[in-house]
Image (cartoon, rainbow, N blue to C red):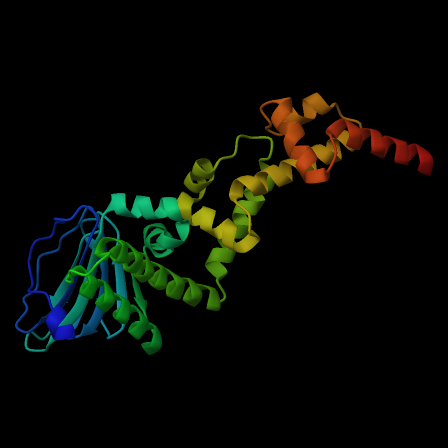
Length: 299
């Protein structure tokens, strides 16, 4: 089936389609291309050959990776790269998948789970991952299924293409996510703790996903995913819970309710009232009154 789905190599480095393109290449006598960058995301699954992938950070600094079968590379838009051919006579096989930023945005509107590996590449400049044999075959089979659907004329091919596209991307993201979380995750844990500490120290200041992402120089989508995966709630929900806890402590200490909710970033009493009652099952005044009565009874 692979030979039937094989693509003739085309040196163009731009997309014709508005959503995605996928290729299976098998070449001999392939020549090294000049470094180039795209305005779309590129996924590259290395199958066979003798090449070194060079990825550039800026104009003069680069990193080189001797590719092994099963290596998966994700290159974000604007990152210059090229494959250096070490042995032109060796058979060079790979899958190449291009997906536009607009298509990614549409998928992300469905679920942020589709973009974990992309955000990881952009946030930490980690572009190459090695897949275990079983995982490599999972990804390869999904590439082949998508290629086969694109070349078919079967009923429902538009719907099937979307399903297989989502399956390919989600499978890749799930595999890399599982790899990352099977490790100690020390870098991720350190980042998470630093964000928690920053929030704790700045509850009286305006806090937003964009502002925190800028503070820690990481993607806001990565932070959103980190909180959802670690705590099961969004960053915004976590901040609200922490602010409500501070408000609760303040008002049971006798502080003014109006001054308290303003101090901790609630724009108006109505939104504070709804959030407080949802969290604690009663209004701020009821909570304060109940605590006051309990304190007097104990006295």
